[in-house]
Structure formats: structure tokens, C-alpha cells
Length: 348
Image 1 (spheres, rainbow, N blue to C red):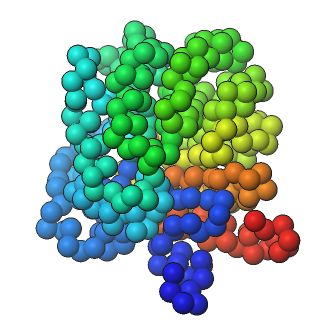
Image 2 (cartoon, one colour):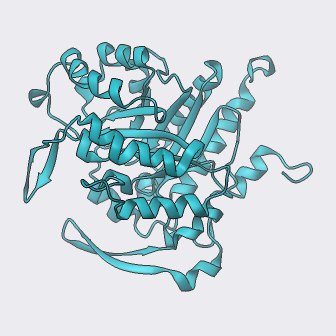
């Protein structure tokens, strides 16, 4: 920090590292060419790669910078969430290194020693159903703890070491009629998480609101597993999740992950179309009462962490705002504003 520079000064130039002792900022994925001139220097422009993506009948050009850009990323953020591991484990069924192993190896080589990563666990082991053709079928590997450890958790720890801050287990939305009650649901999951714990701090994001009941949060607290406070299409607002949790952070690692993913009641494809190409805040996403509430709720969770000797890890997504770095910056501003209003003796 330059002499005389304040945390607020650093936030304004998008240095969001260690804004306060109780909050850390990062983004969901990192290689967006729309961030050139903001997070990444112009030197990456000639190296931008392009591909076409079709989503809900619309075609988009996706532009990405090379993995080496992660060194520039960590000049702005403390944490990076990587989600490519959600789609394929690190090791193949025969135990050989798969494509994602080599991608993660590149990240490990290019990132600084101070980097911290959150990895999404493969859906192969935590999705109740998987897409098959135009529909979905039951997942035969659901809650396969041995495979999860051998093909994902152990190689991830080997590649990242202490830079693996945590693992996110995300489960798809399920109708209430298709899932057991929260107590039975916990009983189904418990043996899996008993078996996979130990490689990294564990956090669960359930996308079925009816499961966010006391038996679930009691079990999380008992096992030291974190609840992911997710601002996502079909989940309740962050403030309601906080109340549902009994106003507690459940991770024994001391982290609470807050993921700002999509506006509530807005489908993925619609949010993506509004946000693309992710190079600036989009008023239809960022200048709404809901967006203001999302920022306020995220900042409130960070302040709750300061009271409870915990750390909130805020992960911003382009689809929630139009531009993830600008969203993280806005939350950081709000955190500092709220912190300044508190009596000095109550600050950490």
C-alpha cells in the first residue's frame, strides 16, 4: 500500500485484496477478455481466443485470455473460484490424468504463492440427476465418496497444496416432491461427507429452498461444513438464508462463502444474454432494487463475520451485475461504509 493510501483508495483502483480482516473477494472464473483494461493489461489483447456459444437459441462470441493472466488476476483479488472441475474430474476412470488435471496444473504454476482457490466438486459425484439427451436421468455415481476422493480431492490437494482454500459441492434444484424431507436428506448425505472430509474445507450449495431447514443447518454445524450463501435464481434472498441458518456460520474452517451468481427469478440464459460481453455493469442488472439488496445483504454477512470471528469469501459473477470485478468493488465499498458507521470499539 502506498504511503497515506487507505483501503477505500485501493478499492477504487480495484485492488480488493484484504479490504478488511473479515472479508476476501474473488470471482467465479477469471479469463474474460472483457476485463482487459480493468483487471488485465492491454498486452493480452493480441492473445485473446474466440469461440462461439449457442444459448437458448442465441449465438454469443466468448473471448478469453490465456491462463497466464491469473498472475494479473491475483493483483486484484485474494481468491479465485474455478468451475471447470464441475464438469469433469481431474483423473479419468482409469486413474490417468485427464484434461482438467493439466489445466489446474497450469493454474498452479502461473498463480503466485499467496493465491487461494475454491474448486467446484464434479457434478459426477454430487448431482442427483444428470443431463441425458433432452432430459435427465438418475446419476449412478451420486455420493460415490471413493471416486470423489481418488479422482478429484486428492489430486486437487496434490496440485494446489495449501492454496486450496475450499471445495464447493453444488447440487441442482430439485422439486420438493422429488426429494426427501430435510432430515432424511441429511441422513442420505452424511456418510458421503464423513468419507470425503479432510482434504480441504467443505462447503455445500443446495439449490432447493425447501431443504434449507434447521435439521440441515444443525448437521452442517455438527460436521463443520459451510453453507454457501448463494444469490441464485430460485433461492431466497441472502438475508432470508441467514435467518434460516439460525444466524450462524457453520464451517469449522472459519470461512463462509457468499456467491453472487444471478438475479433472483432470472434464468441463467437471460442473465447471460444481458451481461455479455461482461465488460461493464449493465443497468438492467446493476441498477435495480434487487441488486441494491444483494449488495447490502452481502455486506451485512461480511459484518456478521467480523462479530463472529469468521471470514466471508465473496465470489462475484458477471451474470449478477454485467461485470464481476465491478460487483465485487461495489460490495467492498458497502462493507467499508458500514464498517465506518460502527463504533470504533466494536471493530476488529
